[in-house]
Image 1 (spheres, helix red, strand yellow):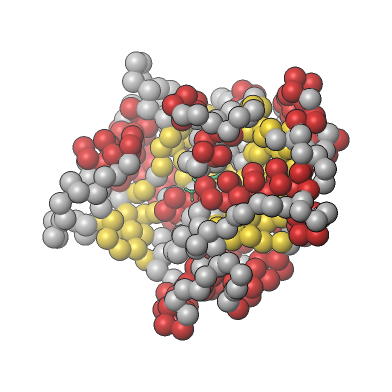
Image 2 (cartoon, helix red, strand yellow):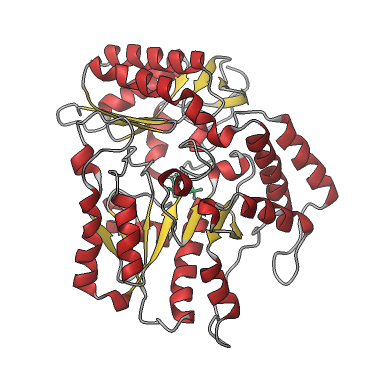
Length: 437
Ligand code: PMP
């Protein structure tokens, strides 16, 4: 191994630390669809890093844009002043506004910050329109919205919620998994739209006048690729509108082409009031997030009654010039290479290759949509997560990066994936599944 550093000083946080310490895996370089590990092995990237490197690795255009920006204007304060590239980037994003409607952009530094920002904007909006009693936020079980206190409060990871004081008044919709489980559905399940009526239950329970917003991932990613039944998001939208509740889509994973449309909002044809993004915004290079808002939300905050908005919000790194440069270059690549819709070209092969794994041992469900797959395994008796982790370890050793969450394997390759990459992923994963039997 080449100059492997001591692994002691850097405290890799919490649960993931133990697995890392037990079997350290270091990645030292990346190009296109591949990582190189520190022992020189090539590893096919089946996960676009952490669902973020949508245009593939090592894009020179992004590196050059970052270099140029660093040597022109490395940093500028984000309060009471601005810099041109942040406005240019916001304008370019507004031009591909999700649903053609959310064309007001607020920059953050990550997905978690985008979630906190969107929740605050939702509450501030309600206050600005004279609905200040609406302070409650509704999330969804098995949702994932990052690790800020806002995100873990509305999120569906019960352990995270148990350990800490949370945002007061948060409640959770039932998750959408019950109906789609074990059904091996390609795309959206036909039935289950009425699961969205769970929002009516929460409205009846708490009173509409207490609820500011509901936040969901259009397709839940990190907790195991949970695809909404047909009509579910439409119904959620209708119920939220009926009760004056803002709808927030967390598109940190689904944004920027993952489903074959620029945003899940476009893919499903359901338009929320706020959208959170990050990850693919800069192709995973320079950390950055963005919240998209409708003009109605924007205008209420900017032009509402005097004193309506007393919210102080914004980050040192909001609209960071170097991140904006990376984002602009990323967007140019997406647009020139047609990556925001490219998934449509490989989707049929993707569905077929992934669903062909259903005959592998212990596979109890496969869910695919866009360029995402969730493959659920029967847990080993008394050892939840162990089987999927073995598959992950085995794949990595053989040269394929997958992701595991509990006993669910998730894949989400860069959107540049070619037919041969998809074939290789499916066959390597199939072999690992058979070995883990
Ligand atoms: N929301 C969703 C839907 C996510 O998938 C993630 C990250 N996986 C986040 C928020 C948090 O983003 P970050 O890790 O950049 O804070």
